[in-house]
Length: 208
Image (cartoon, rainbow, N blue to C red):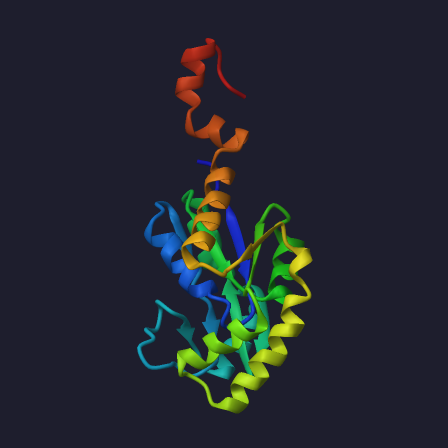
């Protein structure tokens, strides 16, 4: 079985990354998110093991010492990490995996897994980004100001990624994300694996 592809998706807070990934997964088979571990408090409506694996600071540091993470980062005074076991387990079953991580994590992943497919999502303007952050109603104004400052620092790294999507009209951005996934599934090596029997029947010899 060919291993599943690994997708890295990064964006500044408020750009719509999580909504796009959720919609992509709802309309595509055989693709799943990796559920990150985090030390930040759980927000209203979040489910442990679904949105994040919520752990204490000491638990996170122990996992870090045990080399349990493919990547990790500190964001807004809290730690986030991608479980090595979870990603490897899904990919070994042929499942495509999506990592929603920042540029720091993306660099760590690319150093370990160069074939990972990276996508950066940008808002259409800073004004729109601010409107979206305010509309979420999750953070105090001081936190939103910190997020806007962090967003500018995050966005300068867009050119380290293979694909760039501007999330102006949500449906258009989702279509573009679908296209990236579809195009990677149609690459020669993947098609040779998925349709080995057909290709052998058509050309009369085993496909290498």
